[in-house]
Image 1 (cartoon, rainbow, N blue to C red):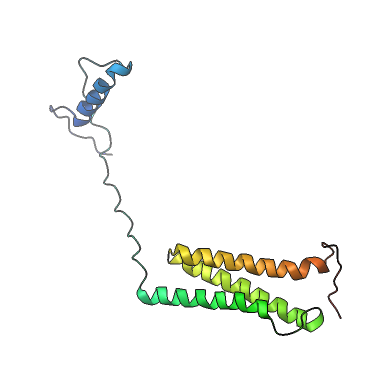
Image 2 (image 1 turned 45 degrees about the vertical axis):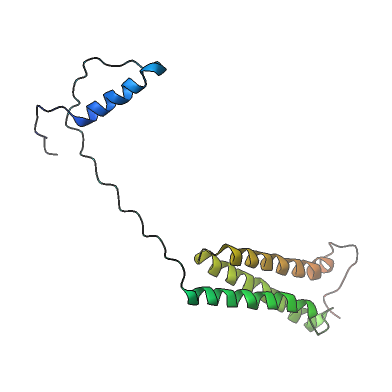
Length: 156
């Protein structure tokens, strides 16, 4: 580390410290009447790093794609309530639970897309869609595992 040159001019940091101490005099801090300059062996202050680039707003096409995903998820979430096939047991139940899993996957897909585009409304809708998928799954699974008062079966 190279030695800095000893100069006769006062250190600007010492003046700043003295000024701050003087402003604290009323708060009980003692001021120094004849401050000695700080040794100039202190490292030179570095420049602050450049601020990170802010993400630009998503393009119009990105928002259109996000809202298309949201519409797909909402249609799937609402449409599954009108499931046209029997799903009380057997293969129909497996197919229905597969569709419920697709509701959950669609909600997660939308949530990731909305999060990366910093779109709060789309993200909230995605989380509601995930919650709806969990509710549909629990309605079918809990009676079959013995949690509910009625006991349903997996096989017909």
